[in-house]
Length: 252
Image 1 (cartoon, rainbow, N blue to C red):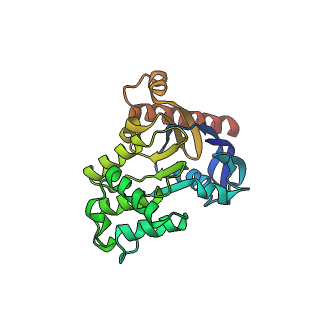
Image 2 (cartoon, rainbow, N blue to C red):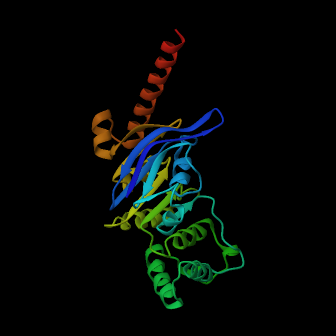
Image 3 (cartoon, rainbow, N blue to C red):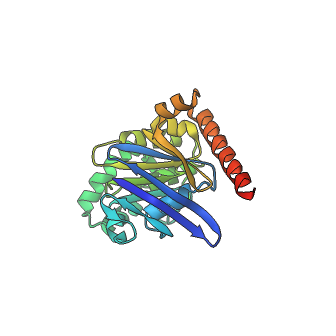
């Protein structure tokens, strides 16, 4: 479903991504982990066709993100922590509007909204105006909007940011339920416990470089750590030490 080869993105002299290569298959929840500034959002924006890479290639569901961006946009749904909603519209109106953009009839849209109401516990958000929403209500509708057309690939970039415990639980349960044949969920977060719960494999990014990628049990076994957060620090500190050693060797 996702094949990335030697992907780089630079802004002047700053390298946001350096030669990242990875793949993710259908039926996976694939995690992108790292602190702020690691390159997660840059990578996801390239996958979502919002940015062009400086070099390298990325293919999603068989479509090259640079050469065929429209085809990519038809098969994705995107959620990040900062998306807004029109304050005067109800959740139902927002979802019907976006369903129409994807060519869905009113009957199809309403049937899908019913499904998403069950999956995301939309409740009164459907018929209240978005200007009255709590953060959790808003994010649930944003997620429903992203998946109204039942996309093959769901991109979640820090989607749990700012959510209360109930909304966060609804999101994580929804992500776990989205693990289906023919589908891929890309889940970006800096909260390791979230990734440990819902992700099948993870890629750890640090300072624009891929530190490691693999199943979580394999990463824990390799580092000898008992949880993903400790394994993350072990791997990142090792990468930093290697970078520092290489810089000293180059200077000498």
